[in-house]
Length: 78
Image (cartoon, rainbow, N blue to C red; front, top):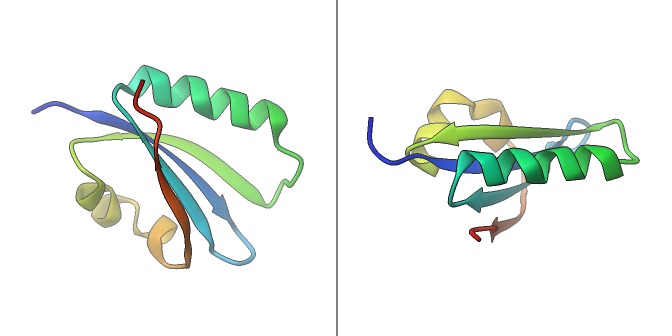
């Protein structure tokens, strides 16, 4: 397996809107997910950290997160 990146997906279960942030490492993504979970006020917003070689691969393996509108794509690389 090649280099992997970490991704955090914030997914609104009601509207299917999403925000995706890419991180240089899976650890950075997980730390960001934990921060967002601690701050989350809307239980309809799911926050997940995923690891993949590419965003395109995630779109195939986790397609439910890509069915709605995109809020923005961020780059959280540190």
